[in-house]
Structure formats: C-alpha cells, structure tokens
Length: 406
Image (cartoon, rainbow, N blue to C red; front, side, top):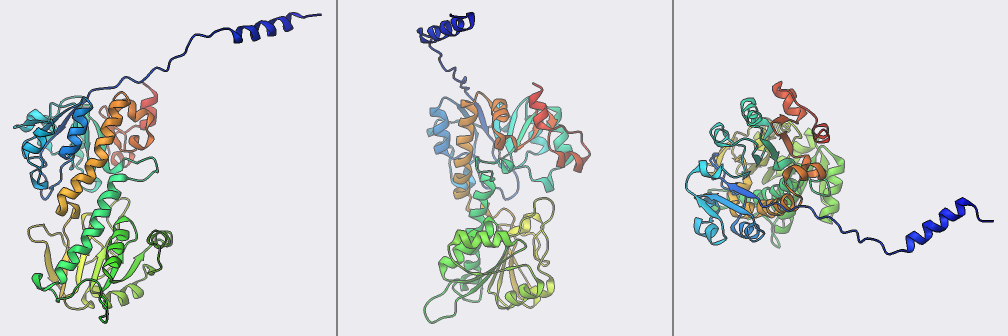
C-alpha cells in the first residue's frame, strides 16, 4: 500500500529529474576609478606611488589616472613618461585632488587636506609617531576614508609594503656602510667583505626583522663576518632558517653586545617597535669603546634610533662623527634609492587598485577583505583606530561593527 508520504517522495524524485532553469552566476559590477597622484612635498621624500608602467596597466583596464607635474622627478620619471603611459598631467595640486582616490606616500599636510573633497578615499602612510590630532580631525570632518598602506596585510598576514621597504633598507644599509668605509668618503680604507688571506670585516646587526635579515644577507654575500642580536629567540631562529646557514646570534645582553661592538667595523641598527619609540640598546659608553673609523648605520632612527649617540641627519648631510665613529642616521633610507623603492610600492599599489575596481569599489573591498580592512583608520569620517583614539582623546568606533551596520 502506497502512503501519502511515499507519493510525495516519488513526486519529489520526478521533479528533480525534470529540466531545471539554468542558474547563472551574478558577477560583481566592475568600477572605473579616478586616481590622483600628487607630488610629494615632505622633506627628503623622493618616491612616487605609481610608476609609468603601473599607470599604463590601470589605463588599459579602463581607469583614469591624473598625475601632478614633476611627481616622479626625484625617482627619474618625467611627465612625458607618464603621459605616454596614458596619464593626464595636472599642473596644479588642486586639480589632482579632484580625483576620487588619492595615492600618496606620506601623510597629507594641512594644506593638502584643505584641497581634498568630501567622501574621498586616501591612501598614505599613517606614521603614528608624527600624526597630529588636528590632521585626524580635519580628515574626519570631510568624511574621508583613510587607509594606511603601511598597515594593510596580505593573504599571508604580513605587511607587504613594510616588508618591501625593509628589504630595500636592509640591503641599502650595507651598501652605504661599504661606501663610508672606503677612502673616497675619508673612511678607514676597508673593503666591506673579505678576500683570501685577509681578515673579513666584522658587521654587527641589531634586530632580526626584515631590515636585519636583508642587511645580514647582503653582508654575508660580500664575505663579511656577521653577528646578529635581537630580543626574540624566535626571530633569531627564523633568521637562521631563512638564511639557510648558521651564524652567530644572541639575545640582546649588554655585556655580549658591548664585546661584539668593540670588534665591529660596521654596526647596523635594525630594531623596530610596534608602537612608540625604538628601545635604545646601545649606550654612549658602548659607542665610545668602538674602533676609530668604524661605521654606525641607524636604520631605526625614524623611530628614535637604537644608539644613544644617534641624531637625525639628512640625505644632503648624512653623516657625523662622534667618539671617532661615523654615524649615518637618515630616516627613510628607501628614499635614497627612490626609483627602486617606487617600483616596489607600485607593484603593490597597482594590483590593489585593480582589486578595488573588480570588487565593486573601495567600500566593498573593505567589507570582504580582512587584510585590506586592517589598514583603514578612518571610515567615512569615523575614526576606527583605537590606538589613535586613545592617544589623541578622539571618539572612535570598531570598524567591523560599522560595516555590519550598513
């Protein structure tokens, strides 16, 4: 006897075998973006956010790019390079700030914020240690969505731009040290590295992060003897694993570090603090005991420096001598090789802009991409960084709660 339940199941099976209506995937609506590249005005900033090749890629994908005249001059890119890539050249800064998305290297000045329009999207470095509260308030008043490129994470959870700039700074620091040891720069006349029959130069690297890793790699490649110090055993172990060879490593202990510095020809300061000032781990007494003519490259100077004798210098006058030791303490070492650094930035910015367009806009990418969301510190005029809010006593809201409310 067939029950009503069996009949329903039979009908369901028959219905499943009938031709079904085709279900088509609904694609995301692709956006055409209007991007502005202003000329950097901050002292010693020579990089540019997009190189001509990246501009050409964006133009070919249907986007509009407006570049301020001479924006790439310090990186040796001419206005002609950009115009041939398809960019429009703007001869006034105000014109550039008519774009919907602004790509900058440094944080905007008060004058630049005044030129910005409401509901604009800004990409720039955050630079927590120098961010004035007034700047944040003005961005909030204009309902800006501000994204710190140095806090954006990739799919592996790392900060790709910080890592890229760290790789450049670490490698460049060793090249600078080599120059300062040579006779041309009134150094000791040493070749950084080693050749058969001659004791190799000794390099001490303080910090086993990205900068320290690439400084170590470059020094080893030249044949130098390298000692690496860090407060984290994990980072030291990771460094040796990434290098694929065993080198001298030590946690930062004053007596051990002092002894290593006494024999060093070059000392690289590569420590980085998560927030605030870099810990000063090398005292003036340690520097005083270093060999005459030795060289200190304090890459950590943009966060205060890890040598007590360090003080900020410029690209025009990069060194000074203290206790017979040559100090190089220029912030933003990557800007010294601005063309290479600009390519590195552009390799990250261009795909990011394409992702924004393919995802249907910046706000949609913020919703779906957790790594990208990590870089947002102002969302439609609302401060979303708890650190900035507490530091400057400004109201802030959790970004995840904000986007879930809309």
